Amino acid sequence: MPVTFSKTFYKLLAEYAQEFAVTRSEFDVRALRHYAKELRLKTSPMTKTLGSKEAAKQYSEVQSKLVKSWWAGISDEERKARTKAAQEARWKAPKKKK
Image (cartoon, rainbow, N blue to C red; front, side, top):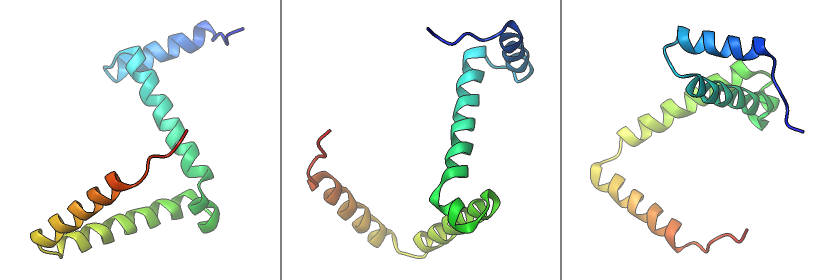
């Protein structure tokens, strides 16, 4: 039997959707994505290793900045060559069986 939600739940969805000027279905999808992202972060190995979501977010931000800085420091020719090599390696790799 499918789960049913109360009238209050649907009323809240409609209110929030109206407040943020989106359709109710769009609000539903965004809320689910946000919730799933937070759960993944909360249960990620990085969070478990570092001890908190905040520390994991900071680590992620630092890693992102380092990568951007590294890519900004290489020449266009090297960047293109690395991208091409990565694409070739990806397409030459055997397909995973489901």
